[in-house]
Amino acid sequence: MFSLILPTYNEAKNIPALVEKIRGSLKGVPHEIIIVDDDSPDETWRVAQELAHDRDDLHVIRRIGRRGLSSAVIEGFLAAKGDVLGVMDADGQHDCGLLPKLHKAAAAEGGIAIGSRYTEGGSVGEWDERRHLMSRIATRLAVSLCRVKASDPMSGFFAIDRQTFEKALPNLNPKGFKILLDLLVHVPKGTKVQEIPFTFGKRMHGESKLSRRVQIEFLEYIYDVSLGRYVPLMFVKYCIVGSLGVVVHVSAFTFFEYLLTRGGGATFQQFSLSVAGAIETAIVFNFLLNNAWTFSHIKLKGKQAFVGFLKFNGACLFGALANYAVSAFLFSFGFPELFAVVVGAFTGVIWNYTMNRLLTWRG
Ligand SMILES: Nc1nc2c(ncn2[C@@H]2O[C@H](COP(=O)(O)OP(=O)(O)OP(=O)(O)O)[C@@H](O)[C@H]2O)c(=O)[nH]1
Ligand SMILES: [Mg+2]
Image (cartoon, rainbow, N blue to C red; front, side, top):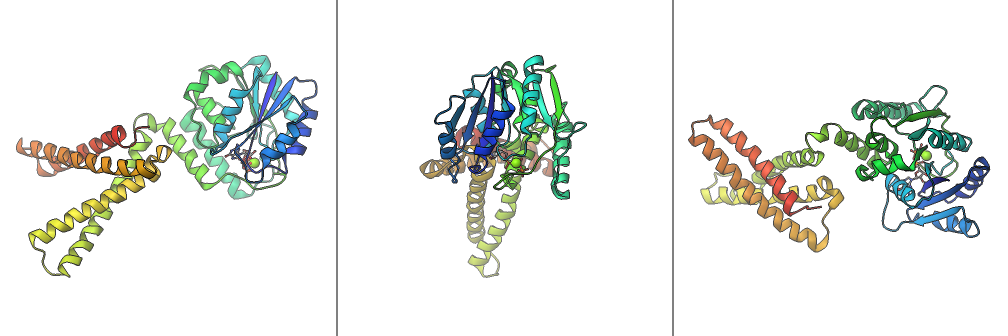
């Protein structure tokens, strides 16, 4: 059986005609269609449920409180009965006529059969130059950095045999749009990959969901599976936040000192108060940005965020002590001052990161 997943978000107007077309194309191929909708505001799920009412070959999964194309596809695959699993967009851009070929290719030879816009004979259709360029850059990055052997690893139109999917499943990353790329990265070496050309069509109704956020998630993913193996993305983000924190620290220090001295010379007490104020300001800034960005996937909310903030303060205090201890130790052994300070600072950053990973953002 061929299980075809349609991930949907605000596709109510497209679904009825598309389901009919798919039915026509897959005449003679035992199949089921699974619509995975993320509780669309336009009630795609309701339209789908009405269509499914008197049909055994159509199923609907309505996900509440969750979003994401990749995770919707994975969830659809997990609910599917077929030995070949397929996916296509629900906006009419993918050619239904290709479905029997994709199914046949994956059923006969195993592995993945891709509906490809970039293999010989395929085309992206009527894209403007900007979209064309974006897609080409994304495809090049994906092919070279992820080392996958396909000309269109960003396609959302493919079929895969169940066994191949299950082998890749434990390592899949459910964020974003790049489900095919992620599968290509994680299927066993030597998996058969076939590309079948098609021309990308126009969206029937509604708007694209390829947002800026999805594009950033894609870049993060590319980093994760290439350089991220050596230096984790979260650590890089943590360091970026830390560097911005230094700017905040210096600005806050200048502000507090001016507030206390009105521009005159500072006493030791005024200096110390300004430093303390600047440290706490930087800690608040770092905590908020790390929580919103570095650890967005395990973001702390409400009471948890308050407790996390206290832990973050604690971890930073120990980080400062570790920083001081290492610098003082190196300095006392005759290492140059600057070297001792820089190594101390790095120790502090790595210490803080590790402690906060273990204590504050544990997911
Ligand atoms: N379940 C679910 N489906 C989604 C989500 N985002 C997009 N989709 C669906 O995934 C398919 C592809 O999304 P599109 O917005 O058409 O993205 P695209 O085809 O790459 O971009 P365009 O060429 O601009 O249309 C469509 O069927 C969408 O409804 C989501 O968060 N959850
Ligand atoms: Mg689309």
